[in-house]
Image (cartoon, rainbow, N blue to C red; front, top):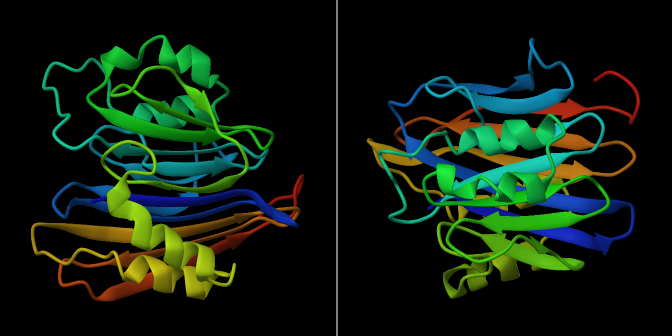
Length: 219
């Protein structure tokens, strides 16, 4: 199960905090989080099979992340779900993306421009602007009951990178074929911080990448 935990406008100085696990087949090729050569304003990992990403942020303050909806794979889907994130980071608006949501297999999208936070799913009705609060997203709809314990641990955790990695570790899937490929933490404020920790198929930790920058300045 992929997992995205979000604290939206509940912490002074950190209006957006995100802790997320990416669960995927180990055989699917992907690049680690980095500022993209072809989009130097975007910091994200990259799916090397379809070209999109599961989670990313722009220097200007846009954030987006996507999860699959359980059982929602449609072989005839016109576009990869990861392109929802890249389109939003490139400037597309959520309501515009919603017009074409049936072109994708089942998905959930969380997206913020720094002023608003939205949830969009093609397994629910309309896009929803979210009020300040704590949110959890997996492979069902937003705040599904199976995420209650993860959300509580997130709320109880100090708002810093290592403790949030600890929260994510309790949801890590270890399997030689499909499991947690990486955990990511984003703390967005006047000096954004982003960290990504990778895992191999045995669940062993790989290198943790850290990025930080001042708004309006290079990383």
